[in-house]
Image 1 (cartoon, rainbow, N blue to C red):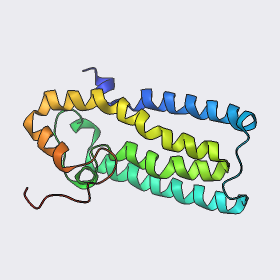
Image 2 (cartoon, rainbow, N blue to C red):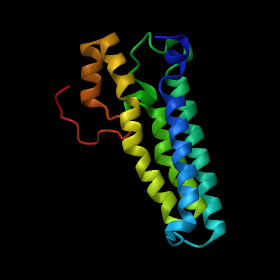
Image 3 (cartoon, rainbow, N blue to C red):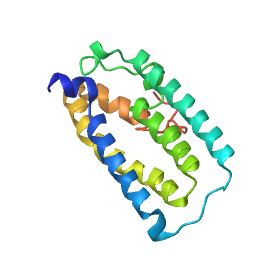
Length: 159
């Protein structure tokens, strides 16, 4: 694993693909002609600002939970990683993408935000294989009790 991969994981690749999909959605707005989601600019701006704040909080929590020097060297299962295996990516997927979609106020952007989930599931698959190869059964047990992007709400009492 290169130092770049150890620090950034699959984030840069996923970001490029996400932005390409956003550009495609932007190009399709007039072609497809979907309606506005809410039609109120002020509402969209408030939602965008809230989503930026939530995303920033998630990013800070993720970075505090797993400092750069520990990435790829230590299996962290506490802090933000107690709830999601990829909390930094989850912050963008769950908060920012939908906030941006509501700010841009067209259903095509909501579809773009929803389409990010299968894209990022595929994007992190290699990262998760690497984690399994590095940490073995400990990572497998962690995966069994922690969701990729969403917390597992219904956990077995047996841990």
